Length: 162
Image 1: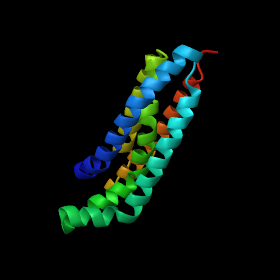
Image 2: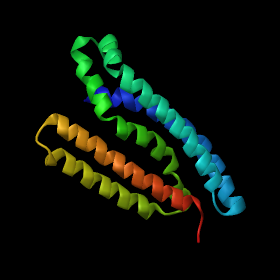
Image 3: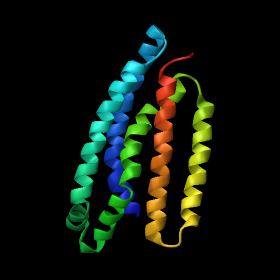
C-alpha cells in the first residue's frame, strides 16, 4: 500500500505543484484586476483534466506490469491497488491545485470543514469494510467523492463575491 501511494502520489504531486505555482500567480492577478478568476480556473481545470486522463490511461493498462518490472513479481499486487485507488489520485490531481482558490478568496474555514469531512470519510472507510480490497476501494471512492465536492466548491469560489 505504501509503495502504491508513493508511486502514484509522486508524479501527481509534481504535476500538481507545478500547475499550482502558475495557477496561483494568474488567479491572484485576475482576482485583483477583475474580481474573480473563473477564466484561469477553467483553463487550469482543462489542463489538469487532460493530465489526469493520461495518468488514468497509463495506470489502467500498465500498472501491474510497471510494478512487477520495477519492483519484482512480489509487488504485482501494488499495481492492482494502484488501479483500485485510481479515482482518488486522478481527482486529487485536479482538485489539489485548484483548491488553492480557498486561500486566495480568504475562505479558509471552507477548507477546514472539508478536511474534517475528509477525515470522517477516511475513518468510515477504514472501519466500515471487512476485507482489505473493499476497504481500499471504499477509501478511494470516498476520497474521489470528496475531491468532486471540493472541485465544485472551488469552482463556485472562483466566480468572486456575489
